[in-house]
Structures are given as C-alpha cells and as structure tokens.
Length: 371
Length: 247
Picture 1 (cartoon, rainbow over the protein chains, first blue to last red):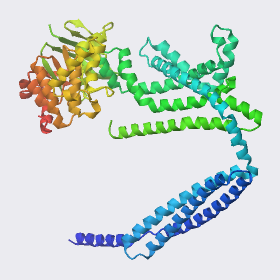
Picture 2 (picture 1 turned 180 degrees about the vertical axis):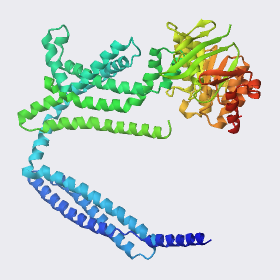
Picture 3 (picture 1 turned 60 degrees about the horizontal axis):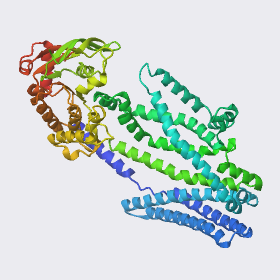
Picture 4 (picture 1 turned 45 degrees about the horizontal axis):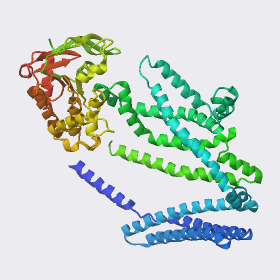
C-alpha cells in the first residue's frame, strides 16, 4: 500500500517537472543574429550591384542589360531582409503571447523564417562573390571566358565541329552497347569450358579500365596508322577515336552489364532452366532482359561520361568542337570559343543527368513499395 | 517398373550431409507427400530429381533410364519434369501469358498462337484468364503460384515436383492453390510434394514419406502414418505439430 502511494506521489512529481519544463521556444537569439546578417547582406548586394552595374555601363553594356541582374539581386536582398524582419517580429510576438500554444506556433514560424533568411543570405553572398570575381581587374575573367562578340562570331564553326563529337558519341555508344554485352556474357560463361574466354574477357576488362582513356586514344590514333596494316592504318582520325573510345568504354560498360547479370536472382535462373531452357536461352529471354532493366541508370551515367570524353579525341588531331575552339582561342588569344564548347556539353548532359536521377528515384520508390 | 527410382542417393555440401543413402520409388499416377522437419532434405531431394542440384552418389532413374551421371541431356530431362517453387519464381518482366508460353514456344518450338490457346485454356480452368496480360508483381501470392503451376503444366510434364508451394502464402490464399493440386491429382498427374500442410497431405496423397536426417524414416498410406505412426521420431514430429495446432 505504502509502496504504491509513494509511486503515485512520484508520478505527480514527474508530471509537475514535465509541465514546468514545457516552456516556449522563441528563438530570440537566432532571429536577432539573422537580422544582423540580412542587413549586412542587403547593403553588400546593393553596393555591389551599383558598382558592377555602373562599371558595365561604362564598358558599353546597355543600361537595360546592366539593370536587370542588378535589379534582381537587389530585389532578392530586399526579400531576405523582409524575411529576417518578419522572423524577428514573430519571435518578439511569441515572447509576448500569453497563450502557450499560440506562442509555440509563432516561435516555430520565427524559426523557419530565420533559417530561410539565413540560407538565402548565404546563397546571395556566394553569387555576389561570383559577380565580383567576373568584374575585378578590369573584368579580366569576363573578357577571357565570356567575350560575347567572339562567342557569336565563332559559334557557327564550333557548333559545326560539335557534330563530330556527336557522331563519335552516337557510333561508339551503339558499338559499346553490343561489344560490352558480349564481353559481359563471356565473363559469365559457366564451367570449365568457359574458362579461357572468361579469363580473356577479364584480362581485357582489367587492361582497358586501367589505361587512361587519353592514352588509349593516343596509342590507337597515332599507332595504328604506323602499322601499315590493311584498312586499319588508313582510317580517319574520327574512326580511330571511335575504336579507342569503344575499347575503353566497352571495358567499363561490360562491368555494368556483369553486375546486372549477376544481380539477377538465381531463383530466376533455376525457374528458366527447370522449364528446359538452355543456358543461352535463359540468358537471352530471362537474365539479360532483367539485367538491362536494373542497370539503366548506371548505363546512362556511362553514356554521359562517354559524351564528355569525346572531347579527348582532340589529342589526335580530330577536328571536334574542342580542337576547333582551341584553334579559334589561339588565333584570338581568348578562350571564349572554348566556353561555347563547355556550354554545349553542359546543355546536352544536364537533361540526361536529371533523367538518370529520375530513373533512380523511380527504382527506389518501386523497391520501397515492395517489388 | 516405377516411374521414378531413387537408389541410395547421397548429397552433401562440404561435410554437411543433406541426403544420406536415400531410396524411394514413385509409381505413375501416384501422389507422394514428403513431410518432415526443416532441413530434413525435402527440397534438396526434389531439386536433385530434375538435377537443379547434383547428387554426390547413388542414382536416379526415370522409367528405368538413369538420369544421373555425365552425358544426360538436362534440358531434355527438365522438359518432362516440372517443378513449382516456394517463391513462385515467375519472370517479372513478362506478363502471365508470356510466362506460360515462353518454354513451349522457345523449347518445344510450338507456335505462339497454339501455345497461347493452350495457356488460356489452363488459365480459364484456374479462373485467371482475365489476368493473362497482367504482370506478376500486380497479383497476389496465391494468383502468382497458380500461374507458376500453369507454367509448369504447359510442358505436359510426366512428373510434377511441388516444393513447399504454399509456404510463402498468406493463410487465406493457401486453399486456392491446393484446389489446383487436388484437381491435378484427380486427373492422374504423378506428383511429389514437399509440404507442411498435413491436412492436405492426408487428403490428397497416396503415400506419405516422413524424412528425417536425409533419409526416409517411415512411409505409408496417410491413414496409417498419421493415425498409427510406428517410429519414435515420426510420433514426436506429429506430436509437436499437433501441439502447434497444425494438424
């Protein structure tokens, strides 16, 4: 009896402490700090926009073109300042409010607003730093990389040469998909009889994954013409580039395929074999189709990096976009044409990267849904 | 001559002996149920019969023809021995219809139309004709397992191996699968079942084999084995099942 009553008593004690501890968080310190940061950020952005903008106008940039980015930066800084002020006001209101639950809600709003203001300030400061980087030293950076006139006048040539990259990419992508599947199948051949081919395929994979792509391209592009072999020594540099990239990426992609093939659950193989399907038919109708489904994201990643590596063929004198732009850059003593190439690569690869992200996301959701 | 003769078969993984010197004959149109504790070798035995697993010693004969040892055409052998797995193992990238006609068209060279008609007839019989174009992962476990049975039946097997086909199913889905097996038994299909469904084994089997440590410890007609088990181990096994409410 005594025991239970003392337990009851201590329960009341716990409840009392619990209630006493149930204070309201008003985030006063953080909102105040945020306000200071936001004010600092606002002035910095405003001053920078004014300086850089007027400098740009002096340099002959039209007033509208100078006003738009400056205006956007100023508006953004103003928005940050407003957020910070709101956070501080909410925090103050939370401190004053008599009702605990209302006060908590206000405190939570203040907290969120202050985090938002802080993160925006950070982003704005980085962008402002970037703008200064472009503008300092009499806009040396902008002039070197973003000479609009040179970009405009050279764009035609560069884009035309980019066609070579696209050709190299398209042809080698198809060859790689077939070639690497063959390698992967050779690497997964079963039994004693499959061993020689299995070892050979493994050796090939090790060799070409170990070799830097640029060296493979160099050796093939400059080496094969010296061999005087029929056909092989008389190809154009584009063809050598395709051969070299196929050999290099074939090694990588065969690993992706192999991972996919080995990732197919053995029960699927057992089911197919138990129906009387041979090893070949099991591979063709069950294992490879399932493997391909699982490896589409990594396959796409390889595809993207292949596209970028088509620029490596510049080393053997193929007139691709990079080489063309290098020629223009050397003639004009300015790298803006190379910037064009950079932009071209970015423009074609970013959508694909997003697509891969989406595919991976979809797969993850499907897994979570339980198959 | 028995359809299936298993003579002194032993199977070990390293030092672990899963089946030891096991002998068992199965006649045509017979339904044999293998029961016994987990790890007693039921599944391994079934997988040895269609050589998904290789035996270590002994021999297995089908209609007197030895199917163990080198030089046996395994694809040929497996055409005539169907197996249904505990985990269904349907091909997830194919529809129900594609799952069922894959082997007849690619192995037997049957025409696609003919195979589809045959598959549809089977699916009709088990009440899944409307799911023909559905993918397996959109179906319940019971439905998938019924399709897996049809997939095996499409090859007209002379022997059907059922490896704990209801063990992965929710209780309410078990009966729809067992109905098909009951129907097959009535039609005279020779079957060997590894199962934990004692009630069903009792009803459908001609013979029950109690496996213990990789051997047939006791066998007999269901009424005898369940009603009056002779061996000590059999009695203990059945007693523990009764305690758990599984009989």
